[in-house]
Structures are given as C-alpha cells and as structure tokens.
Length: 510
Image (cartoon, rainbow, N blue to C red; front, side, top):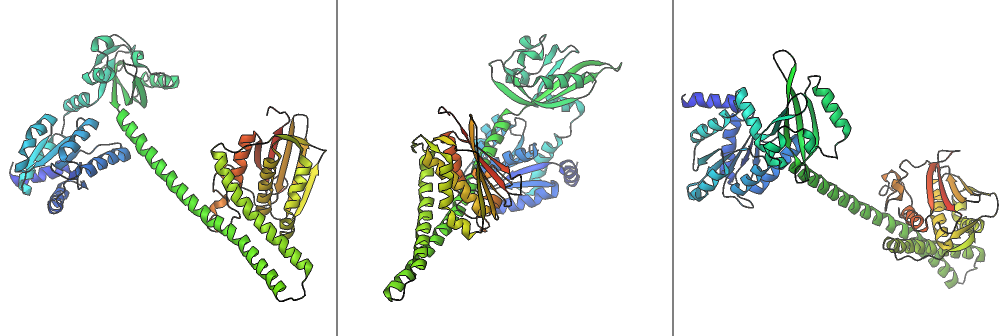
C-alpha cells in the first residue's frame, strides 16, 4: 500500500477514535495537533504529564469511557510521560499508548518496552514518519469476533456457569481479582463471593431476567477471598444453543472499585469547596447585614443625643415629654445593639459547650407579659394588633433567662415578618406546656433553612428584603437543643403566616 492510500485508510479507520495528545513544546504541539485533526475527529490536548493524567481521569468520570489512544512526549515539566503512562496503565491495563521519543531519551527505551507501550516515534519527525506507527495502532481496533472475545477476556473478569449456576470456567483476571484459584471456583457457585451489601432483590431480578434468555446488567459489589470487596459493572449473557434453549451463562465483570473511589474523592472535594464558598459568601452577607443592623440604632442614638445636647446648650424651653421619649428611644436602640452583640458571643459559647444554665420553676404567663412589654414600642410603631391567650397559670422548669431569649427571638421574628396581627397562646396540661406565636405574614417556604447560621428566607441578605442579622433563629435552635425544648414551625391556620410552637415537657428529667 502506497503512502497516499495508507493515509486515506488511516483516516477511515481512525476518524471515530478519541485521542489524548500530551506535549510541552508549544510549536511542536501546534503543528502536530493540526496533523492529528486531519485524521482524528476528537483530539484533546495537555501541556504536561500532570495535566494529561487529570484530563484522562476527568474524561472517564464524565463519559465512563477511556481514550482510544494516548500519544505523549517523555520529558515534560511537573510529570514526565513515563510516570503518566504508568498511572494510566494502572487504571486501564489495555490502554494504547504511543510515546514520542527524542534521540537523547533512548535511556527510557527499556522502560517503554517493559511498560508494554504500543509504539514509539522518534523525534524529530515529519508527518510521513507518523503514518506507519499510527496505522499499526489504529488497525488494532479492527478486530474479528474472535479477537474481540480474546480482548474482552484479557481486559475483563469473565466466568461461565451451567444452567444450574455451577461455575464451569473462570479466566485469569477472575482469579487475580478475587483471590480464588480455578480449582476453588470450578464446580462451585457464585454464592462463594456473594457480598452481604447487595440486596436480595438484585439476585431475584438477575435470575428472573437471564432464565428468560435476556441479558442482565447492573453494578454489584463482590466478596474477595480475603474478605475485601470490589465493585464491578456486571453483564450476564445467556448463551443459546442451536435448539433454541439456554445452554450456559457467561458473566463479564469490569472492576470499577478504584474509579468509584476516585470519583467519590473528586465529588467529596467538590462538595467541600462548594460548602466553603457558600460559607464564605454567607459570612460576607452576614457582615453586611449585621453592620447595617448596628448602623441603624447607632444613627438614632447619635442624632437623638445631639438633639438633646443642643436643646440643653441653647437653654431653650425643653419639652420634657419629648426628651423622655427620645431618651427611651436611645435606651431601646442601645439595648438592641447590646442584645445583638451578646447573642453572637453566646452563639460562640453554645458551639463550644461553654454556656451555663440555671434551672428553676417560673411562671410562663409572666414571662410572656414581660417579653411583650419589652417590644411595646416596636409593636406600636408597626401598628400590630397583638393578642395573648392563656387557659390558666402555667409553670415551666427550665432556665428562665434563656427561655426569655428564645421567646424574644421568635416574637421579634414575628414582628419583623408579620403584617399586622400576632397571636400568642399558652396551652397547658399535666404532661406538656406549649407556647405558640403566630403571625399573619407571607409565611416561610423553607422551614428548616431558617435555623441555619446566617440564613434568611428568600435569599434576601443582600437585597435587604429581610430584616435582622440572620442569627436569631440559629441561636434559638442551639438553646432549644441544650435545654431539651422541642419546637415546630408550621403554616398559620388562620392566615398565610407562620406559627412557631415551643414545647416544654412538664418533668424535671426533660
């Protein structure tokens, strides 16, 4: 076959093959890539061995297939072609690799031969010199049926059984992977390496499928002789005789244990990085919101204080009622700031288990009345109609101060996100006391997410649709956990709002 015909034949054979080409020389890589693209439809490029190996792994994870041919230089930065080839062959023993070798790299020739590299091309070269080695490699993809089966048995874990499931044949790979000898397997059944992690349903489905003469495919974990397990993509094929009946079954397994492990590691790292990024963004958002929450009361304190000082300095007629109101506002804003800062410090203590508690019996009705009074000015400012219903005097055994903090945070949330109505109710029986706070706001879609640190409903931290620091309900969650107080968040029955219920068990053991 002349050179022109061989090139045309090579194009026809190779056009559907997928190639990974690894070369650090920019000029040579560009020239060679142009030649490869005349022959192969798909060519991926890497500039060193490390990048080549990463691309090889990424390709498998994304497509569940290997490259048909890897073509690589030897001497490269970060990782040379020999080290990369070894790593690739450990993942896929049958990978076809072509090495491009310069004259001064002949010291690697023995190592190349021992690795079983498909072919090598000596540099410097022109496109004509590359045709014969590539033709030889690409021709190896043109198998007959017998050659396909031979390649299959070399690359896969193969066994055969009779119609009763008794093993009649295992190949070398089967013995190498499982640790069993042929003598131990032939005459036995596959139950010998049946792994307990597989569901019984998978075996029932397997037998139901193959006894009907259909091919069965699934992923299974198998038990090695030493007690370890290996994951395999398993295909079981019923072999039909001339009489139309099943004469035996052939099982083909491909060991994917290392790839699954690598995939899990890659996915775990990806999840970790995503969570780190989310936490970073959440902290950034929280800082913006929290500084805004501090800035608002600080502005009020500064402006009201300036006004009072100016009135006193100018000896003007002082409106004592107005001054008293302004001082109340200064005091309330300063108290809010202090509570926000204290809450953040106490969250840190809660997370490290350093917060202490003082348990005593206290009146729940008095606690609610005290909390409502604390929010009087805010309730008036928002024109909220607040009702408090209780059946009788209710007593709770817990840390009164911490329960006040919990109720304050829940009520504060109802004031911020409700419209114009809030209903507080205490129900009490011999076993349980419940405090419920219900608003008529827009409600909460994700009722679990609101208890996450820095989280606010509707992802509104930066848009300022939400009000508050996003730390309050996280603080509530931690306090309830420590004090063994149950809680539930529901849609309000009488409106579109939210009903938050605290549940106290009426016994001192909790």
